[in-house]
Amino acid sequence: MRGTGRRRPTLTPALSRQGRGSALRASFVAALFLAAVLPPGCVVFPRGAYWPTYESRLAEGAAAGHGHDPAGAVPDWSDAVRTGAIRRRLRAAVARRWSSEALAESARKMDAGAGRWLYGGAMRTLVHLYVEPVCYRDLVVSGIESFRAALGDGMFRARFAEADDAAGRDRLAEALEILSLKARAAEPVFSWQATEWLDVAMEKNRALLGLPDGAVVAEFLFGATDALDPYTRLLTGQMRRAYERELKGVYAGIGAAVTRRGGRVFLEEVFEEGAARKAGFRVGDEIVRIDGEDVGGLDLAEVSRRLRGEPGTEVSVTVRPGGEGEVRTVTLRRTVIRVPSVRGVRLLEGDGAVGYLRLTTFKSGTERELREALADLRARGARRLVLDVRGNPGGSLLEAIGVAGVFLKGGRVLRTRGRALGADWTYHVPLFARQAWSGPLALLVDEHTASAAEALAAALARRGRARLVGRRTYGKGAAQIHVPVLGTDSAVCVTVARVFGPKGTCLEGTGLAPDHRVPASGVPVRDVADDPAVRAAADLVREEPVPPEARP
Image (cartoon, rainbow, N blue to C red; front, side, top):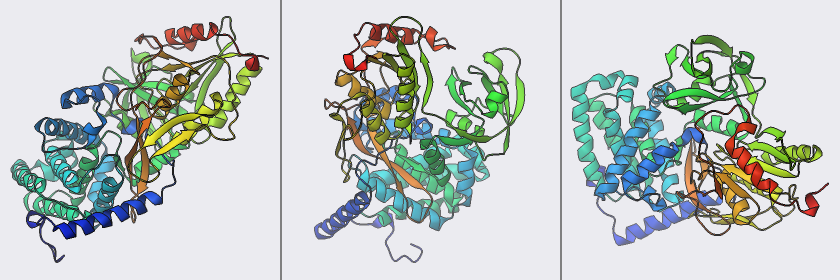
């Protein structure tokens, strides 16, 4: 095709047994090389911008007919039930991602050569490193099906004027359906063979509709990752840089965190020194418009992206104070915000000298922040602790291991298991870690406590060090690494391992049940002292004796 000297994918025969063995050996060597350059234990957990909601995850598992079976993440286009579930997942993902104008702009700028290089590199990473065995054929089919789904999506068509041709869309969709059926019968064993299917799709698009090549490449890439699990993602250069800043606790924006309730967007947190706080914004205010555009049709990740930007730039934000009454519009100047991991450090009223603090994420410096906060609480007389990890979506696994050493004296924390070298690893409390808190401890958890936060909760609870209070956790027992695609500024965030607690139970899909359940109140709480879960946790730790080493 186009002078490559290779046969078109529709005609590619199965390899001979000898050739197939050589291909497998080459793939194995490539897998070892890719894995060897990654230091053991260098595992991170992506955060909320890349996640589905807890509710959508449950619904998806029920629709797929496999509940929370981790193996259900691997696409199987020969199974009718699984095929329907994958197609629903792909359609939902298409609508979410094309709400971003930045992605559409990147797609318009990408040429076919750059797209082929990026696609080939990303596919190699998935095939060699993904936690479950996955083949090029299924990734190719997922990309084709995702492109078909995009043609029927209103948001995708709104981003690309070429998609307004209904007849052209129908002809291309029909061609893709045939291409998908042919791809299911193919056996590509090299990434260049998978890339040839992308070439065919781009050629058909140019002949029948005329979308930018980058739009086709994007759907092939995102379709492949979306069909695997909710956490494996292609990260564009912009997404990768934003995530790296987030792990460091630094970003540029208005200084506020948002959440969605009942289809509306509210301020969940307003940070000190940020433009939002200076403008008088408060927790519970509803965001109605950003730069004059209603936020009702945007997903939460896109709302966050629009509030962020380069330092010194301005953004117009329309809010409804407290979610009621008249709106007001304020122009805010974005600044660099340093977000601490540990917040809300205080003593709770009542007997028992109970301290409280929130651990919001695991990033560079989290362990140090926590040790400093605990030293402050001890100096103020705290002998018991309520550690709030509700809403904590995870972060750096290594920081979570360090935090475990704040509360544990040696021993196993968790284990990861995967195919890649370095993914099968047992983590213990760091050798020279000093236990900083030996007093009674309760952890507040909920359905948004996930990944590294769940790993910490499992380690403390299963070893009898803490009691869990609140609601069942999210159930993200999958570990990811970022693998750069050579020659580009993009990376693949790929699931390389399952996470197991100290007792050997996999956290994926099940989560952790609390020792003491406290249902959601449904009413925003402005003071943690009035929070029913905080009160319940404080009562539990007050019942426990303080060990001699924790006394003054």
